[in-house]
Length: 343
Image (cartoon, rainbow, N blue to C red):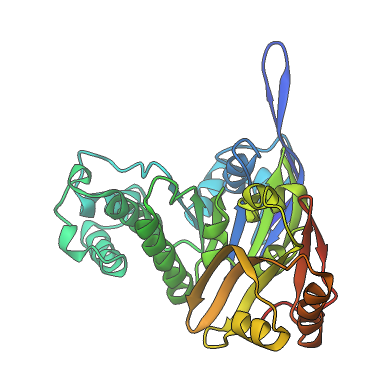
């Protein structure tokens, strides 16, 4: 378990000081994929570097599996760090080394015999789907392949925790999707706790169990991804989760509502059912849904007719069927009366 208690980080210059983190407290449970999301400058990358003491906090306590890092001697800290792997946006591979030797590098530093290190590296190459690239050099690989090598290298010492700092930001959407699927598999197969730092909600929504939202050096809210996605409470969470609302807000007409798909069966024709039951046509302003193992996840923003009676029929259907929705009014959200989210 990772426990962050009242973490602060202040950078000082000759003329001023800047608080990158301000009294941040989080608990990351063993075996989960935990996301930390925020805009650039929110403090999320500083926070993840405090977890393994690449950045030493100005104040507060970092406790990993009962050991407080600030109280450890240098050798004890180095030993604990072997239990924490880290991957970066920039890959950080050694260009003069082959793929196999890049993965072996942390094992060499740890004094693992060459034969054992290469055996472990080949096992990891198979795990990340690059068994045929062991003799290649980084310059011969695509961005996605480089990140897979970086993941394999981070896993070489068999860490319990894996920190991912914007690991997919430099990748195209298809490659990002494959890397996220790989991280989900690693979490399940190796029981590695993963901490994901990102500014993209689609990354959090794809693989994370829980999420912390950061803004201006503080955590604004923490919760299960489904809950935060369905009902974002802080302004920054709404901005991150609902990036399309600025466009939607400019559309005139009837009331706009937001439906959340939290695992509704992909085979359930929800929108069709609403239209048929209420006899009211609906305008789809925005939709982003995906199918995961036969379940639908995502959101949809609908515009109701300007006629109040027709709009009431739609709302009554939603309430009668316990379908949660939020009313979008001038950029703000008001939660509908339904008792649970879609699905």
